[in-house]
Structure formats: structure tokens, C-alpha cells
Length: 472
Image 1 (cartoon, rainbow, N blue to C red):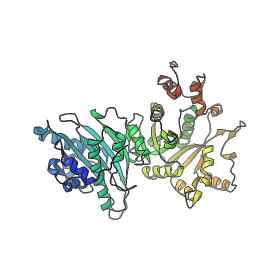
Image 2: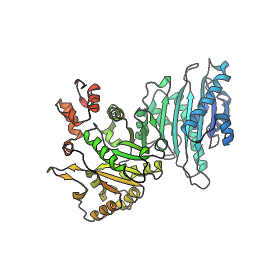
Image 3: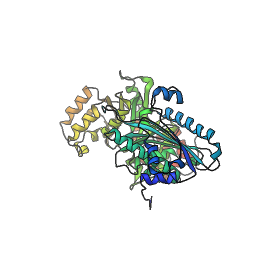
Image 4: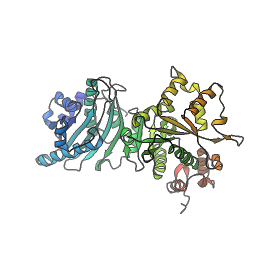
């Protein structure tokens, strides 16, 4: 990023137009041909644009790309890229030796006349970095926050130019590429909540780290990836799902974490308003818990994600330090389906602390309106006090005695439920203690974590572990 000069949209488009090697097509559906329009307006577009198309009518779109049930979706975008890039390769063979072909595509839903929808879309580029080389793919999902459809269209046009320019000029520096995507756009106009790079020129790129960069650099508040490491777009991955979420540091994941999940899931499955076969378990890490002295240890982050993924779970990283902001975001994705949040009793005390909401005018009551005004339920797991006694909802202590009435109200209305611990002995396990024992070479930490986690730590020398034989 040192010495980086932000380049204007017109300058970027003209630079691409004047590069005789870059040549391709544009297929844009849903928001006007805003991206290609920038290249036409810059001048010299004949040096870049082979063809532009915009199959707005669904019947026309189906005749070109095949029938579809969802038009603003990733599968539709990939079909468009396949079709358009194949057309270029098959019809422009005479240019193949000197040209780097690309096909840009988007399928977008902008704000409608009545403003009853949410502007979003899928954007993709299939492109070569050398003539006659296999192509690469870049796919991203954007959410448009402008409260005017014309402004959303203009923002989309700018991000499309930034995408094409960035992939040809900043592809060797993924963080610079990511930050350049919002050049020429004011803060908060567009959110990029999913980005994926693939292809022979990007085999070294870990898309999970790109997801982390999106969150770290403020392009989105949350990013997701599955057990296989593939990045996910939240609203698509969570579509019509009932989410059961456990947030924590998971450094490392211990028997306590899995028992919280086990006991929370047991109660969540009993809820009348969920479909058991549509439950999505989500492990959530806040960026705050990935930072040390203001810096993020990327290897440490990936180590934790790999461990969670090895157990078959989906991971979310977010900027949401407050539970109510996290719940509000997830609720938008699941559209009023049941959302369960598993937390420890000590975290519950923090949630009920009015000082936790000093940035809200309505403080605790405003936050609770957001948190509990949705189809949300908290499952509260016990902890062990210094005196060895179990701490639960029933004996939790608050300085403000009026809080007890609010807590009872939420319990009576099935918004908060206590869950049990299956084995009181594991409540003595603390992740910081496990890491310290690993660093000090002490025996016994292996019994504090699941065996698959212990073996992962040993195999990869995680958290300061030094060459300990793997248990078979």
C-alpha cells in the first residue's frame, strides 16, 4: 500500500482501452450497462470491447443462458461467464496470440421504484494474464447501500472498472487489489461480502485470507467460509436455514466448546418453529479476537479455522463486537427463521450491562429491541465460580437489581433458556491454560481438547507445540 496513488475511474478505463493486449466482452443484467459505459465514455473503447450485451427480458435471458429459477445468483453469473468467454475464444482465434481475453459479467438487482427491496448483485471476471494461457476467475457479491437506484447504478459502474483495472494491475498484491475496489466510492456506498479468486495465476492465494482482508479493511462487516475452505456468501449459504451460532476465540477449540454446542443443539432441535434438517451450525470469530497489538496473525487465524473446518463446521469472521449487531446481520440473511445463540453465563452478564451500550441513545433497551425483537433465542451455558460452585442463570448476580425482572421476562417469553453441562469436570478447562501448557511442554493438555484437535496441533506444531508424536 506504500506509495499507492488512487487513480480516477476515467483514467483507469482509458488505461485499459489503450492497452492493445486487453480485449473482451461485457454482459450486464439488471442495472443498465454501467460498467461498459465507463469504457465507452473514456474513449478508445474499440481497443478493448469486442461486444456488449444485456439480456434484460427473462425469456431472452433464458434463450441465451438457459432457464433459471434465480436470476440474481452465483450460478447464473457462472453460466454467463462460461457462455461469453467461450464465444470470445471460439470467434476471435485470430487474436489469441497477442490478446489477453476477458469476459466481464454481472447480474444485479437495484433498488426498485417503491424501495421495498435491497440492492445487491453478483459480479465476475474471467480473464487471462498472458495470451493463450488458461483463464482465471474472480467472483464477488456486492450489497448496494445508496438510497437511490441511479446512485446504485453509478456505484456499480465504478466498482466494475476498479475490478478489471485491479486484476490486471494489482494482481500480485491481493490486499492492494481489494482496497482499490472502492476507489471513487464514498464510504458505505457498497459492501463486498464475498470475493473469490481462482485459476492458474492464483493457486498461491488463500481465499480465506482474502475474506479476512475484506473484514479488516472495512469492505464488509462479516465473511464466511465452509469446512472445505471455500468462501461463502451469507444470504445464499444461509438461505431458509435455522442458524445455531457459537462465538468465541477457539484458541484452541476445547471440550467445553463442543459441549456447549452439543447441549445447545439438543435444546434447539426441540423448538417448534425450526426444520431440523435445515439447521446450520456456525462458529463465529470476531476480528478483535484475531488481533494482537493491533495486528492480525494470519497464520494463527488460519490454524484455528483449519481446526474448526476439520470437524466439519462453517466459520464466520466479523467486526461485530456486540451481540445485537451480529444478530441483526444474521437475521437479515435467514429472513425471520429461528436463530439460536449459545453463550456462557459470564457473557450473559455483559449483555445485561447498560455500560455495554454507551453509543446507543436508548442504551440497553434499544439494544434489546434489536436483539430480542427478532426470532432469536439465547442458550446460556454454566461456568464454574472461584469457589467451585456452578454459576447459572438462577444465581447470576447483577449490580442493578432491576435487571432481574427483565431477565425473568425474557425467560418467561422463551427468549432465554438455560442449558446444562454434560460433565461438570470439563468446566475447569480454559483455552488460555491449554495454550500455556502447550508452550511450556507440559503433559495433559491433550485431554482438554478433542483428539482430532490434539492431533492437528501436534501435526502442524500449532500454538507453540514442538514436535510431539501424534496419537493414533
